[in-house]
Length: 111
Image (tube, rainbow, N blue to C red; front, side, top):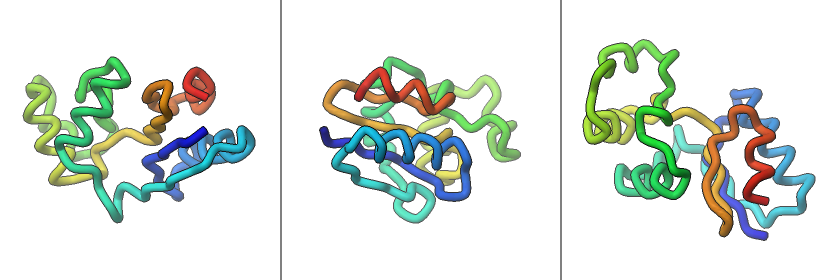
């Protein structure tokens, strides 16, 4: 099974999700999204495939997210593309779908 994880190695939840994928024997593509951010179009596609809104994928604990309260999905996507720290992690994609790994066990649904 192929899997892509949008990963931040400094994040414990992201490391836990990566470990689950490795234990499952996934053929992994690891994207350190702070170094290689997904495009706005890619984010839109991932959230649509996950059945979630960009607002649900917003890392609201970040200071830069506070100014996005009440923002449209389009504005949130623009902000995430410009400042990838706003992307909640980890996002995992397989042929079975996309999940936000919070908690990391949710990625089992797409393994």
